[in-house]
Length: 553
Image (cartoon, rainbow, N blue to C red; front, side, top):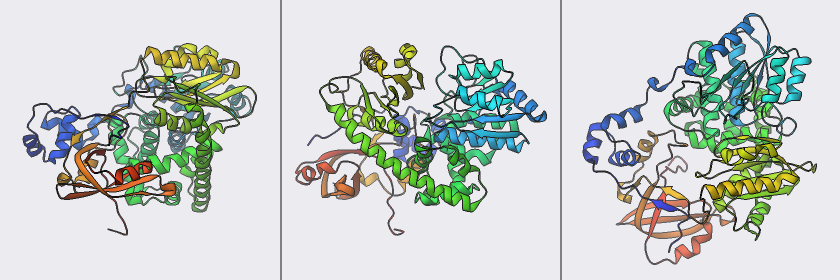
């Protein structure tokens, strides 16, 4: 039986002495094999990676314009100027807004925050909102978080009307930057920052470090949530600061975060990057997708237990509604992806009428998994001939760079390698589709080629134990550029095969090898249960390890 959806890449280890390295590092031999497969060669390299220390945390003043930004913010505080923190509506933006707002409040600033509405204001600096805050609210300084580098029109308006804008952002920078007072960005071409993969919350955190003249540990829980949610590189200082944040979350003093974790059904002892990524962050994101994300900032900043409980329950209900909308739209979009107009294309641009625009990014992600094609999903929710949507990509195509040459045909556009947001008139939908397909051809994409699955080691079931799982976790937190180790087990016989879960969607079985057994589960593979149960020969498995707890066992 051959049922692999991936092209397995099993590492060929260089000529190193695994046993000697294991002895020198005091690490399990399987951990050493994983590290060698990932490019580590010496005992010192391995020990330093596993141990991690504060030396990996970089000086915030290496960021472009940081000194200038700090001086302007401090002068505004001293002059009691009205400061506005202008945020974003996803989990990265919400946590960024919270950190910047609380930092300035702690320093005694006259500060308020604004989180734009996805549907009314769109992403990034909105000219009408800037005009409102400058002319009606008499705001004298605007600090953006997780947005701003593409907000030329609104930011130029502010500067021309005597209101300075300090941009803190991490998104792809356009050729023409706004005329902001300061632009704090880890990849600014004139900057010296050694790590370019901070999230929006990472940049906001660095500004907080510079303003407070210390590393504010009380914000590490937010750093962890925003960084995990935004799928940036989990290496360098991100890995250390997220690890520290995850350790602090079970004892967080944020009542709202406590309540959100509780309604999500997560045990605080089980908090890790996976539970944040699949339970906490999606709930924060759901508010911005379907409603007003300022509610999420309220949740993270409130000291009122009753208010926190009410908001957490409301957010949880919003997330349930979001899941239903995703499933409805995905079913329709998946059928379109398979029709004769789309099935032979290397990319997908799928548009619909009255689809809820707040969930289209999730639908696009699921279509990429289904088809192995870069995908953009759009909707004219207001049926006004203007389509808004989101795109998701594959590793071999930078979606922002693919579409950037045609940006004059779009009403709004921004994003990065793996994800973009876009607004386009109906007449320009063919331009969008043609540009994306042309970029895929130039990148020599072939959706028929199975995506690559990089495995870290081939192991025997006899080598696996519950003791190994926490040892593997030492290599985390896991994420982009530091994935969860994937192990291969060859020549396995399967027994006790059954389809489980709602609609029998998942596959459960026992793997048997040389008298040793291992319980296995394959999510969304229930359809092969019957075929697998009648199999007489052996199979190979690729997967990740975890400990399953049931009633304390």
